[in-house]
Length: 463
Image 1 (cartoon, one colour):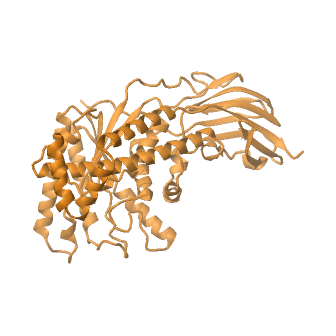
Image 2: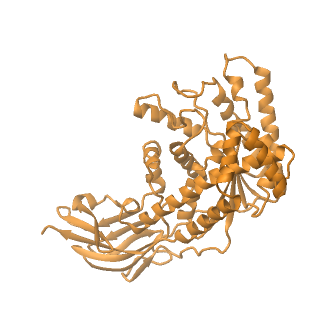
Image 3: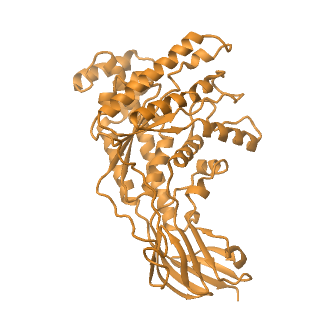
């Protein structure tokens, strides 16, 4: 039987568990307790996963949105990898300490024979069919191996798109290649049913967002990228949105205060303490249960195409009972964070998540920067792992220091330009040091994902 889902939505209801009366303390219910168990999640795939952009976003979302459920995300992507080749290293790359509790898998871009689609449509039909058979056979064996290892929570991604509509790509167009990728959804759904896994479509949502992007910019642009293959930071946020939309996820706190009666009329995912004052000047302690996501530049562009903020990153403070013709300032910990006309506040919630002075917005930014450092270091570490694979394929023992060094020496002296670059990464920093830095950053993220309480004051000005 499949394990219980790791990510469960929670929501407090004002009035059921705690009630909304009184001003000393109003809560959204029983706050989830932080688990002592860390959930390890491995993400397996090719260079799209190796780059780590969508993995970083998912990691940040679940760390900030579910602080009660500590997670560590492990990049198991390798540039150029296929499902078939990954089977040869699965024991040493995936089934190692810590054995993951959850595995996400996305292969396909390198599996279906991109070069076969470069020529005139209608060519290479037998080779194309054979590539699909091999991909499906390898995926079935891969998921069987993961399931047999005792990992019951498996997620299969329909491969992200190859951009067939971009006219100015740096890679030649391959007519029909994205159709071949998208058509694997049916097979993956059948495979998921067999293994009680889950399928997330990463193809259709990005194709649709790409159409909106081209219309919005009125230009030959792509959310995938100039090479038609690798979703960069923008595409990664669209992948994040696709994942969250198809799995379900918590929003942020929603609070409504009636300034005239000085009562909290509704509340979710937060606590309010010491609400006091009058409709012209009141204050309270705000204790949110969850952190927002940091709106990076790529996030902001993605938000034009999909409702990231509206659905997942809008922390609403609504205030009713104010005078519509007045002007009010909102202070956070005694510092003015914004000035609002009364008619704007009346019926128009303030988005606390994106106020720069919100200490949790600041903390989310700090976590984003750490996660980006982790992503970049993990990217290099995975390239060093690729060098280890090359060495192993030449018959060297990567666990024997002298034998491994001999294998590295071969690629340093005789390798091609890419292989020599991999050697330079290996020479630049020892593997143990890279792994220690990544482990330290993961631990630091877990220490930062607790929301901060702060004081909010709303007062009329200009009288």
